[in-house]
Length: 125
Image (cartoon, rainbow, N blue to C red; front, side):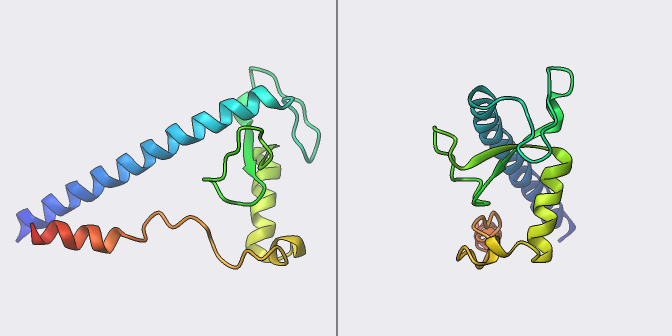
């Protein structure tokens, strides 16, 4: 029994690591594209960035869908980490009327939606 739990734990750790790696690869792709398309300036506060502090400039998905990455960058805006946190904080708190009136009622990304099914399938094997 303990051995099965250990194996399940290892499989879960591997699945989480793979998911994180896939996300990092996807993010690197659209981040690099956005940095080529747009000036290195925060779209909210106007703070300018250079190579020394570029890691503090993030890509924000306007429609909050991280899988919506058009090549023209129409769903992205560059925000400093502070403005990006503020943007998502306003969304969580419901202070941004435009977000709630946009027809987005729930999260679009559900990374663990099939987790139970996958784990149950592993146990049956």
